[in-house]
Image 1 (tube, rainbow, N blue to C red):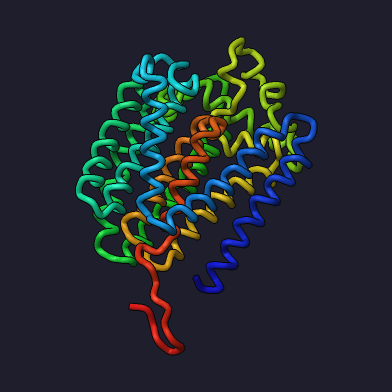
Image 2 (tube, rainbow, N blue to C red):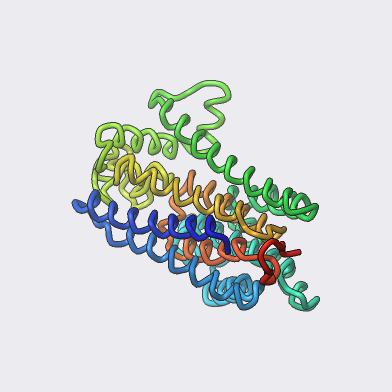
Amino acid sequence: MNGGVRRLDRLGIGLVILAIGWTFLAGSEGDPGPVAAVFGGVAVAMMLGRAVGAVNRSLVPAAVVVAGGIVAFLFRDDLLSFAPLSGPFGYANAKGAFFMVVALAGLMLTLAARSPIVRGVGASVAAAAAVVPLRSHVTASVILLAGLPLPAMVVAATGRGAARGVVAVSGALLLLAVVVTVVLGASYSPAGALGIRARVDQALTHDRVGLWNDAIEIMADHPVTGVGAGRFRAFSPIAREEPSNRLFWAHNEFLQQGAELGVPGLMFVLLIFAWGFLRLFVSETPDAVTALAAVTLLAVGVQASIDYVLHTAAIPLVTAFLVAIGMLPSRPLRRVGPGQRDR
């Protein structure tokens, strides 16, 4: 591993430490523990994924596939229910996001494994896992699975430059998704909208865009430290009027961080995602697995920009564990003498 990559890895650790510290500092009026635990858990999962993947790249997606199978078995009674509060996490969209990651793990296993039997298992799991968001009517997960992995695999198969291109485009698409949701939230009007904007609001649900607007206004009123971890509902007019727990959240993880932990809290989340894409981009031997790792990060990030899926700890932890193998060499790098290059 070259010095630049080592420095980048240290930067990632530093970002997580700063994010945890800021969570306790800015979120002290609320409940910073769960948010800080997710930040720390993501770092640990990433390091564990890289350690396991260094032994054998296919072990990491295989572990995610097994975890998905265990969850599916334990919650088989309502696994395919489209009820909003169904499934292992008590929320259908979180269930869809989790099995979206499991499906991507199955695809990564088909690429990383050497055994035809294991590759066949990976492909079968990918197809089976994709049924869960489809039958559960989790539209975002279905669209992301249908539109992202196959093109990324095809493009990345043409060479290392193409694989890096997939990583770069994935990062740009996530940034675009976050910007679009911010623009939609900032331009929201309680009186409603007309034309194309009205159709967009209807597709996302009117309350969702209104919650984004509340988060932006809270962030504008409390730009430095926010209102405290877990306190969005106390300050959101729309959330206060909702009797159920459904609106404890801004339905946008980036904006919720901004509302509860200020602009620095928002920036830490964005920077950690950006670090993930950058670290994949500088992978020494990027390939289709690297590209799928970027797609996984993109897919989870996009769903996090329209829902509160990262508050289900299993999703960011499994994502970090899986994305880690995209940062590893696709083959062991030989030690070479001065002036020579690995081939």
